[in-house]
Image (cartoon, rainbow, N blue to C red; front, side):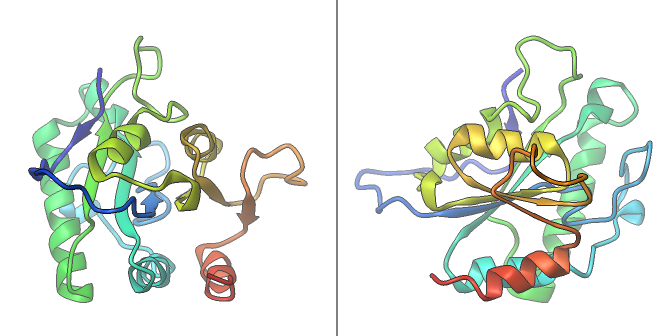
Length: 194
């Protein structure tokens, strides 16, 4: 199944120069992950404190901000696409109120892991679709996530990758940089030369 997204702005004529994007995995990066379960309602959606500095860093540098999220709870029949839209509406409204504007776009994949073809990360399908739609400069873009599939998808799409979590000695991790927390990633980015 092709990835789903929630906005389809019309593009006309002359396209602007390619622009970098900061791609955010959702559960575990934007909001608290529910172990063994899915965020099915706004009441279950809890923002992570470490997310806000990352969003601010990306906005200050004029990156597009785009969510790339696997949501196989839909494919499993545990939640509906309408449930997911309610969650994302809440997320977007909260971010807009706190930071002035919502994410530029959201892509989600409802496929089960065994579905073929499959848009789920580690497939780069969602990132590539966003790249085409938004004319994204992938080489100067970032994908941040908390699972190996996030880093694999980002790398396959041609983006730089940040992985959050504990992954042993990190030598065999397919990510450009690995940090134990969102806060340490934000600190590193803040000191990164543009």
